[in-house]
Length: 283
Ligand code: AMP
Image 1: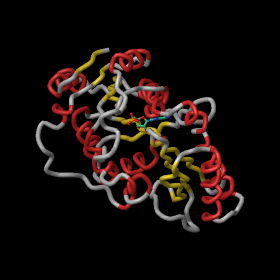
Image 2: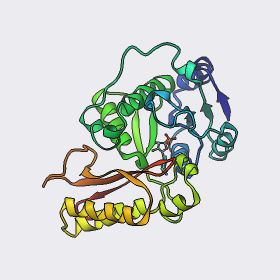
Image 3: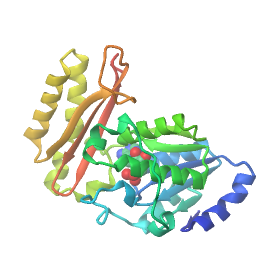
């Protein structure tokens, strides 16, 4: 495994592999790796000749009052986890390396970014598309791996890649969870002991909403029940709890086949998100 920090080193490392037509599987992350990231690396390892992992806490996807400065970082630990997954190349650039000059153009996502996290984190998905498209151009992967844990991000990236004919295949990874159902997240380290024991309620509430919807309860009543559960069992403030069609993220209609029930809650020092994607047939 090799770690590169600059665009030049990355290009020099990849050039012979591009020339030899090696298939590259790419896993973009913000580091502080956990089993969710590892499952994406595993899938990439099986499906490609070469696995590239990027570790970059991307400032353009953080709002002014968000946790950019205190986002957890530990490159040494990340390196060990990547080595265990037989990653070939880690790309860990500095902010200056990725953004040497002020960005003068943007890729603006459409209606999919106006709901859920897009509504409460203005500009977040502009920043995501900015860094993801830069990384795709730098790595030129055949396949890129994204987790369903960030269902809205995945949907927006899939749309961008399809509609802009970006030559990469997006592969979806299942959400990896702790034993009690809490989705693994780098931000879980910010939870107090009490918050950590309450946090699985988010997934329980989302599952409860899914069950109610499938049993014919109205969207409004099902979401209210989910909210009640979170209020009763946690100290968290609810950012949103919503049911939409997936992956369009449009309102649910009679013809919707796949749905997502998604939630975001604020604990004292951590905002957690989670979702359940399911078919109206109950799968
Ligand atoms: P992050 O480092 O949080 O930006 O995440 C990098 C990638 O890992 C994204 O595609 C995430 O969706 C994915 N990811 C994060 N947490 C999980 C999880 N618990 N299970 C599966 N994938 C995840």
